[in-house]
Amino acid sequence: MFEYIKGRLDYVCPEYISVETNGVGYLLLVPNPFAFTEQIGSDVIVCVYLHVREDFEGLYGFATRLERKFFIKLINVTGIGPKGALAVLASGSVPHVVQAIEAENETYLVKFPGVGKKTARQMILDLKGKLKDFMSDSEEYASVATVPVPEKNAQLDEAMLALEALGYSARELNKIAKQLETQDCSTEAYIKLALQMMLK
Image (cartoon, rainbow, N blue to C red; front, side):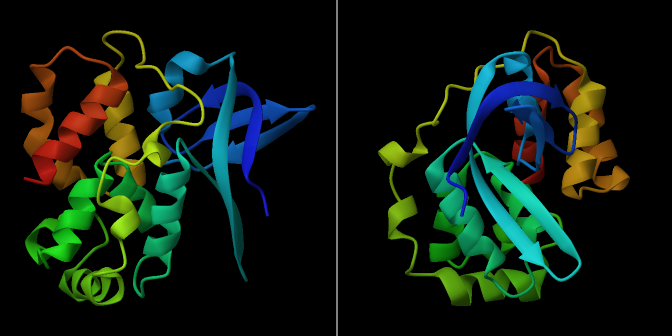
């Protein structure tokens, strides 16, 4: 089992990041690739999880060990796959998701792409009362390596592509596009702002 990968961040796109170490480039599927934008060309440390099934093998990356731990909790819920778990984590507010589960707030949970009422109910049944580690600001929330904010005014188009990769539909994104266009912030900030709008 892999614990983390340390190497040079080579590439960032809406779906994944690429980290090169010892001449090998590792494709890492992460919740918010653009959180790493400013690190391109620099050394990074990314916590990883290898997910294997009959028709697919994927290496998932996370900024913190606790984020990875929550991802594993989510993919063990019936109806939630790795892509859905990444979409939940991309909101950047694990404590809020935990609070929704503990409060049985299905209305909040169904706003994530791929999570319907049945899946939201399953999340509550499977996870309620089992998330003590995620209830407070644990030291494990701290990044293994610092991930700075990308440079100012990164393209909104990149943020929209990243949100599409997470599973949000064009219809959902069009509803918030005009509000986002009035903002002047980084790609990562656009993504977080968009998620906040859709999770209200």
